[in-house]
Image (cartoon, rainbow, N blue to C red; front, side, top):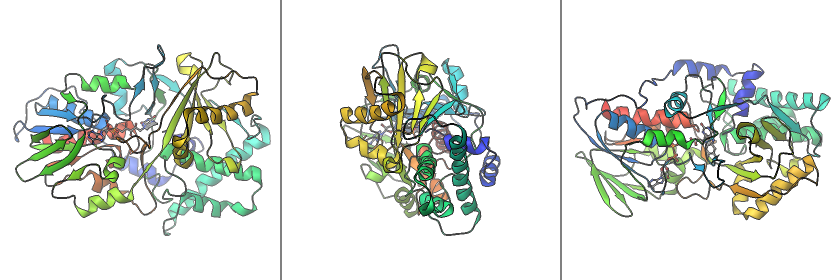
Length: 467
Ligand SMILES: Cc1cc2nc3c(=O)[nH]c(=O)nc-3n(C[C@H](O)[C@H](O)[C@H](O)COP(=O)(O)OP(=O)(O)OC[C@H]3O[C@@H](n4cnc5c(N)ncnc54)[C@H](O)[C@@H]3O)c2cc1C
């Protein structure tokens, strides 16, 4: 996720009181970081299966193993990490195809893990940005002021809506009503659209689908953002050290009785006392995994009503750097190109390599998954040529993600959809019959859609077993 909005709210002093309150009310115990050694408590040594070797599953397994329990992780893919995935395709330039940043290093458990893993981090700054208009001109003077004004107007519209006790509505409808959309000039419409699309980059859902009341009912990010020049996978590799992880095990069914659980994969059946299910919300929604006596109604409602959105990445490698020397490049497309190639990261800053990363979220992010790589690269290059001229070099290579088409993710991360409420995440997290426990980013009411939220949810699920 790109976190523009939460940062922007802080920088212009528009932080929503409800967010601050939520953050202060829900201080979390981060003490369990996988370094403690213990013996099982009163419940004795438990046999636990963890489904999924993403950060939540590995966090849960690490905690359980360190407390002396007998843990096996079952993972469908041929790799660990899940939505943390560092590509080594370009030698000497590891690239993160899933998560990139620790969002807010202060009080963040991933900051501690990074130190323990010895992983180098580099700060990126949202204030370090060069902004371009649809025609490619750099945004300056009155237009830069208008750009900022529309971002504030958009944020204010949503904040005012959240203070009223109205029926929920989509982000787009709330903002468009508030700004008098139909009377705006084309250039103002483009700026409001950029502001709308910014929410999609952060929260992954379409502004037509995201709940204006609850979409940002999450914790405030504290501190700088950092990324890993050597790849996020250093964190998951560190957590997985010494754990029993079986890859290539596609879980199909989970059954339980008062005596224990059976987890059936495409290859074997495994018995245990407990199971920690960290399947992504998109996988739960797909019905690819069935549940023995069935899940409680409140949980199936939560699974059905919360949303899973898209954020896709397109890395382009060039013979040389020809772009602005800021961390971010932001492009304000015309309204008919809504959401197309609006946000770029200058990968040359953290890595020294001539690489650009283009993001596409929500509807456009989903649409281009059906395009060929060539079509996607051509579309990206059309935007870069508009900005930097027709003489820029062609990319020498590319790497493109398609998270919605990924059968073990079915999307990038969860969002709060119109019709859903924040407490549905608690329903998603609730254990069933004391045997079947749930974790994963979507279950974390405070920090959903992030690595640290997923990690904490794994620890919390594990603690339900360790007591
Ligand atoms: C493009 C992108 C960019 C992101 N950027 C950031 C960022 O910069 N910072 C940030 O904090 N967060 C970011 N996120 C979000 C972050 O990556 C996730 O919130 C987090 O990694 C989710 O961890 P998880 O353990 O909940 O799920 P996952 O990592 O998805 O783990 C679940 C595991 O279950 C496995 N699985 C699925 N089905 C089965 C099955 N049937 N049987 C067995 N195993 C199965 C999966 O393969 C996977 O390994 C980003 C995500 C994406 C996609």
